[in-house]
Length: 377
Image (cartoon, rainbow, N blue to C red; front, side):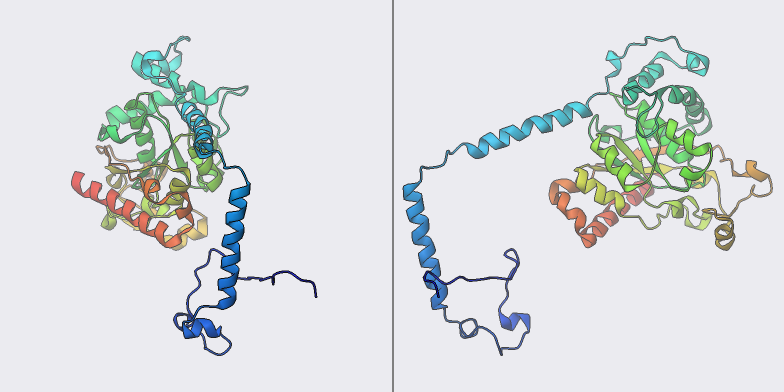
């Protein structure tokens, strides 16, 4: 045998809390006699004493470490954060936007302030192709915006409040209720956010995957700024510092019957996980009016599954009037933005792995949206 101190091997995780045998509920047979009797282990005492002596000797022989090392490292991290903030703030303010091109088509009917808002979004597709990596095209948005603005002003006659809760830059999530079969509530929210933010912000609505498989519809949604709801797309949008609009109820909210009007369905939890990872606030949003635009009397779920559709609704006008029966009634919309929920400041990104905590935070968001709905109906 070679000389030297004995080698001790520990198989336990150093970060794991080791409980006494009595608390673990394990049998005393085979346990450490020193742990069971309450006495100290003489071998461990000698090892700890030897370690302290070696540490003192090393400290006396080696030169002291420079004190400001941690401060220098922290200062080196700040430029990356500032660089991210500068990247988020690339959208110019309205006063800085110059209208270089002459308006064409329906865009010529828009007032100058609305044209400036659309021109401020050109930076999102700043590259060799006329659209960004998610498919958004500023030229397509300028073509479609006058039609949606007409619906906003004259058909749904939208009013809104709480715009001070919309951050001027950086990632954020708008969590709203969903209803009315066709996503006019999402379209009206996108228009409202664009009209009440400076710098103008484009809310990127996350749409269900089935919508991304519809011919022509999927291309149109992408060109006007909407994104198919995958985890990768969601994370990339927040990493880019963009504003993401989500409907946590999913299709369960869009196909609510008249007996469930303004009663939120179960929320999916994925958006809370993404908010924690990206350190993004969650803004609860209440949309009043969408539950009344297409009153659903019945939803024939078996027929919907057989046809491969998200819903098979029976309304006062559908299927009696054919596809025209799905058009919404000209109800008034009211959109209310609530105070942001900053879960990331309290829990941090690692909390996204705690399923029970994420579920609890999701319920808090749901209660906030339901409270806004109840107060403003």
